[in-house]
Image (cartoon, rainbow, N blue to C red):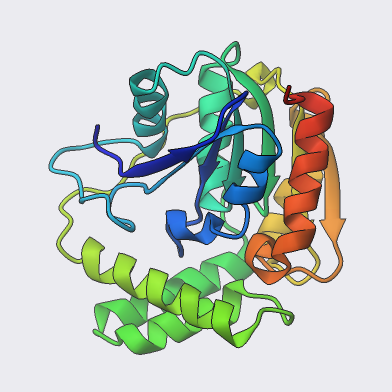
Length: 252
């Protein structure tokens, strides 16, 4: 198996997919409560994040997740994705519609999305800092951009460490994940698209527009949230996920 992962619990399968500034440890506030709610919870690191090594050949994060599902023998699974993890959840749900039972998206990216001016400006600033070797400044830019006003100092330090590790690990990478065109209309699972009022416009617009692309999807905006609400108000987001899963994939 190419991805490092943890798992715990019994019941309907639930896979947690992290954002591209974090790793699987971002789900530490959620997975115990989800397990205790009656789910078999799996949380993994994409390649080059956390404890997963970089790739030695071309790859796709969504294909790696699909391989993980096969490795674990999971025929039916709910997906929770944060940012880039949401993008991967959408690709998996579109390519394996019969296998995905529910999709919860937290400030999700979207396959095929063309960055708007705000996201493009951030990406250019980040890339320029990294190209100049200013890792510390790139890390602070990401912490400032992706965390909302209610994130604690402890959470900011956690994101700081996760992102720095990812940057340092990816510096040795020869390959980056590629994306495949997907038809989101193929998704049949219930879908909850969450946005944060303090997030970049791109991600708010994606969440608002997903109900037009996916039958039965619904949008919820959190007025207090930035881009990483599961870290900013973990208990609130945990309760939100448990309610959504209880409605769509009830445990027990």
